[in-house]
Amino acid sequence: MNAIPQFPRPVNEPEFNYQAEPEGRAVLESHLRSTDVVDIPAVIGGEKIYSGDVEEVRAPHDTRRLLARIHRPNEQQVRGAIQNSLAAAREWTALPFDKRASVFLRAAEIVAQLRRHEITAATMLGQSKTLDQAEPDAAGELIDFMRFNVYEAQQIHAQQPLTVQGAMNRTDWRPLEGFVYAVSPFNFTAIGANLACGPALMGNVCLWKPSQKSALANYRFFEILEQAGLPPGVINFIPADPAMATRVALDSPDFAGLHFTGSSQIFKSLWRSIGENVDRYRGLPRIVGETGGKDFVLAHPSADADAVTTALIRGAFEYQGQKCSAASRAYVPRSLWPAVKSALQEQLPQLRVGDVAQRETFMGAVIDGVSHGRLNARIQAARDDGQAASIVSGGRTWTEPGWFVEPTVIEVTDPRHALMRDELFGPVLTVFVYEDKAWEDTLKLVDDTSAYALTGSIFCVDRQALMQAETALANAAGNLYINTKPTGAVVGQQPFGGSRASGTNDKAGSWMNLLRWTSPRVIKESYLPQGRWQFTGN
Ligand code: NAD
Image (cartoon, rainbow, N blue to C red; front, side, top):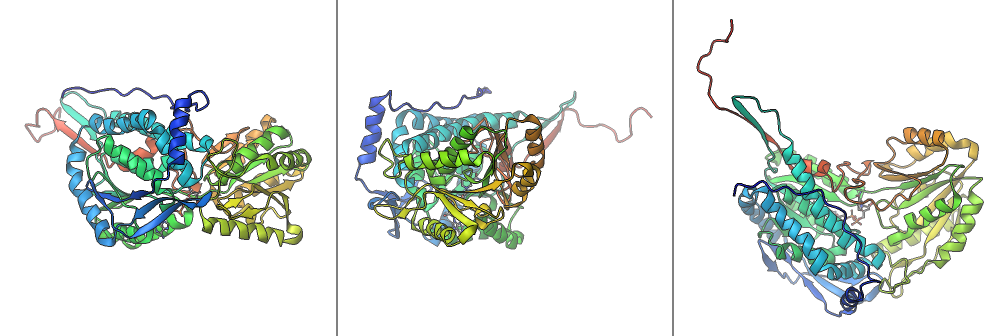
């Protein structure tokens, strides 16, 4: 009982080498080939609820393939989930930190050693990720979140006020009073896990509403949490209709915090509802949201054209551009453009688009028909835009057997074209070519063209110009990259998040985020109470 275990600073989980480990490859492939259709229940207080109100999950790259059926809980069940969580809160909060931490560390071990291939395969099939994209997400980043959160929470708990002789001062890192509503996006399996588990590690109870589009991999992880010994009700899994679940959660007087990742538009709508309901709540809720991006790559005339090209290809087209951090607008100087343009035109047609289970595939499909329709419309509008926009590479879309969009590069003549401003969330990169001497004006354009401020890359060898750009773009990105692509933040190395329309910048996977899920109480205990009211010494 009287132990204070110390959790060491973790190292990042190494990528599993499927080339070198044929047994792992065989297990992965058997999961990829499996024709089982998974029934995904709501899980409330440990009870699996198969409502029969079913939504189908199909592989985006092969829509003939049914993967799962989500059983959506109804309004009464979502209300029940809130009550159930609140009932679970007392015991969970009272559990010492190291015991809570052990649940999540055990979950990390189960993913790493027992169910890695299964959750990676679920991510490949359900979210149309190639192995190169799915393994660092569903295994690597997810495991890192679990382990680094424990270490960082321990650092928070260690922050204590000064204690002097005769009295003890301490900070009790309490969880919030009520429940946290965790709403996750489709594009990273790891993010869903972190949105629910970060607050729970800090002693909170959570309602986790996953995206319907990633429900299969999210449910696999929920099963892993159960296997790891997470007590029933601490996190209730509610794959419900988003608008209904959100209305019920945000109407509750016990709503204590929102942990959201997704589009800026949905986040703002949730923020508005919270504002309207503010008088209902027991406390003032914490609102944490990581949202959209219109992430830039800015090349200086001193940059290396090959390095810029590679960053554009990897940054814009990995996972079909469906990363919040994906490069989606580029500023290239006139002197560098011929080399970059011809390299893009030569290399992009080599990127294979298709079935994510095949090793040579670089890009799978976009997530669904809605996204496909939106991207198709934007590409068509660019074609119809006369002189203002021209397709440099790609532009084809097709729907058999899935929602495919070719990696597409569009050059625009107006740096404030809508394609340089709006998040498209797909494999479409827009380029503006600037005059070499207009470096300073271009810095201004990068800064104020888009409402977002998530990630950005500067490619530049000239130190003075680099310094100038870093200063001018101080508020243009929460994660800035120099001479490297703007994607691929690693837990513990680049805490992640942006400002402006990109979110509250609470830096997922770090103490900065975990801090939001505590409401500290400071306690002073005097060993000998004062015996007289008079001041001493006078
Ligand atoms: P989305 O906004 O469509 O959905 C996010 C979540 O909100 C899902 O769980 C969804 O079911 C829910 N939702 C949808 N409509 C709702 C409604 N009316 N009321 C309540 N909830 C609702 O986003 P997405 O398509 O899943 O993910 C892509 C977006 O997420 C992009 O904008 C991307 O930039 C952003 N994103 C940001 C980060 C980051 O760290 N900044 C990370 C990943 C994704």
